[in-house]
Image (cartoon, rainbow, N blue to C red; front, side, top):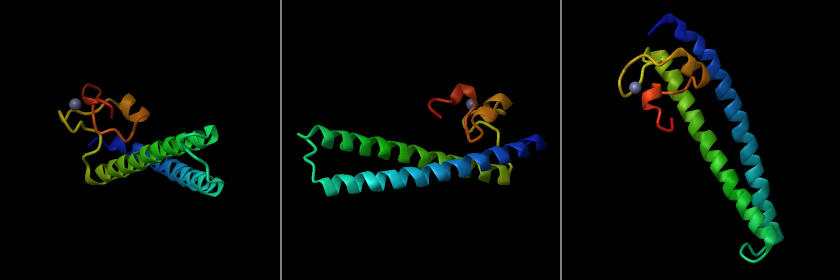
Length: 117
Ligand SMILES: [Zn+2]
């Protein structure tokens, strides 16, 4: 692993900190929207406000899942830095372009194998 990859550690740590903050904010939102739904005793299916709340809850759940998986990806990338496997594609084992790592320092794949990652 080229020594230069150490600089991605601080990018990953920043991303981790930001993702944890987002996770906490999203979870708090989700909890307060859930409370609102419970307290208001709204009929989800027939009340327009109820469906808005249900929609918000499903949106929040999706965002929370995304941020959870981002945190897992970032932690895995930090682990790869520790073990010296960072920066190579998991599929073809070629070094991942530095520009790509700068944009997505947690990526496990080169541009050719990026499919959704
Ligand atoms: Zn590849």
